[in-house]
Image (tube, rainbow, N blue to C red; front, side):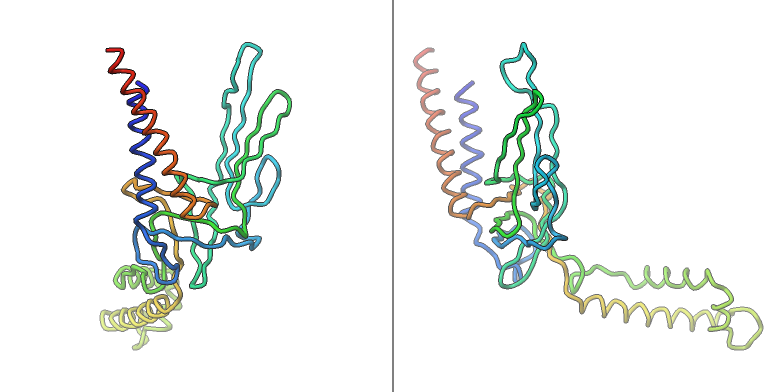
Length: 257
């Protein structure tokens, strides 16, 4: 059993070390859409910060766990876990990117432990102003990457105009008969099309918002306050330890058999 656990642990940690080593660090402003590695400084803007519920400290991410221990228990039991879901921003010299931490594996967070009223409270936090490493799915929302439908937006705009029939007739009832005939309605549709096309051009000229989130294909999604080099070294060390456990347990199992 120990050998099997060591095998799976070695595969997991070795795979993480390889993922970090094989992907070059991308610049936010020129990063390709897809799986990327980013390294930037977390914003300290008040809109980017949240407050940890245990200590009241401002941070960009937290995970707070509460443990209890009855008189008959020898070990602490986790009774609650609260993880922040707010996005935060990182920057490098080329641009800014929002990070959605949902389902992320977080490494290098500062850990604080307090005891109160028979409970143990453990909070992990990442702070604004520090360098943050992110490995995840990069995409750009809005701007030139916007997915827009002229036909759908034209239909929506015409439906909005229909809600005010008095104004609609004032604009498009050219012959003054109190009705919008087919010719007049076609003019209204052309105007709506030109309006929507101009709105789409304006949207695509705006700067898009870069976002990193968990990959859909279950690839590693990692957020850390450690540098890529330190992360890789840590995973390689764990990989070596797990491999050693695997080897020793395998030899022991063979000897016992």
